[in-house]
Each structure stands twice: as C-alpha cells, then as structure tokens.
Amino acid sequence: MRRAAAVFLALAAPAFAQERAPLAGDYVCVYGCRPTDVNPSIAIAGARADCMNELGGMFHGAVLSPTALACFKKTGTLAPDGVTLTWSDGVIWRRHGDAVQ
Image (cartoon, rainbow, N blue to C red; front, side, top):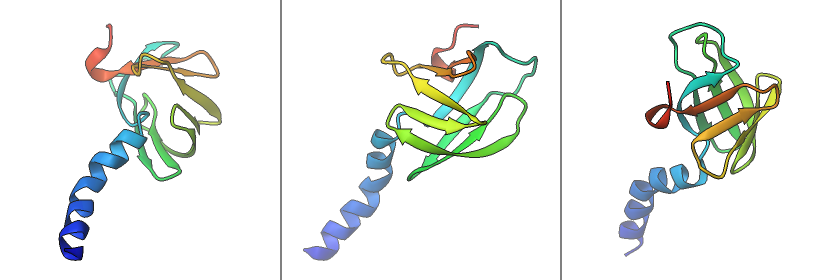
C-alpha cells in the first residue's frame, strides 16, 4: 500500500507543481518590448524562478507569491486573467497561446 501511494505521488507531483506555479510558461512580449523574435519564458522550481527575456538571456529570480516573482531586477505580477504578466517597469507579457500579436 505504501509503495502504491509513493508511486502515485511521484506521478502526480508534476501536475501538483504546475498548479502551484501559475507563473510558469511561454510568453509573448506585447508592450514595451525590444525588437526580437525570441519568446520570453518562466520556469518555476520551488521558490526559484528561471526567467528568459525576449533577447534569450537567462536570469534567476525568486517566486514572491503564486502570482508574483522577482526577476531582471524588477517584479512581475500575473493578472487575475492568468494570462497577462505586468512587470514593474511597464513591460507586459501575455501567455504564448493567448497572445495578441
């Protein structure tokens, strides 16, 4: 029985982690962007955020809450729509699949 529970948790852990990391994903920069064809992205691992900017540069930051992170020496906040990420300097990213181009 314990082994079955351990196997279930091992298989379910990625799904649970994704639920706790609504910031993670691929984005498209839609406002205040630098001209480039690289899509920014965010990966979450515990309290760590790995952020790729629209130039392809990788930066390490920190998760501040389920909807906020610090990266690039600024703060990003996910809107209630779960799609729009607004950075403290005014730059706006939208989830890749939902982006308006």
